[in-house]
Length: 82
Length: 82
Image: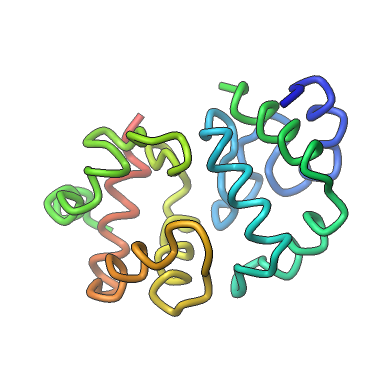
């Protein structure tokens, strides 16, 4: 994925996951330094409604509008943060 | 949670999530330094079958046998790793 494109896309994620990938609320996951392939599979799981409970409904709303390229870019961006 | 009790319980997790919480395979999440409340909610989501796809079936097998105390201890253990 393209981390720079991911950074632009991540504006909508920052409110909960933090501008630096450290979650603003402890019930949300930190994304900084997480494995990119895992981030992709998690985003796709939300997009495919394979996750419910917790904030899954909010995450579906976020993921539904993302293309696979967006997902790869977001994963590259957050995995590259430390 | 009790991180020491969590460490003992984590033996069954280490194969995929690494002895130090850094996943052995990039499609699995790193757990080291992740937020404890998030880890608890994720484990409970697997236990309650609120997650499918990916390795959810394996994670259900792992989580099904965990008590809330085990879950809190595991979350304390992994969140404390860096």
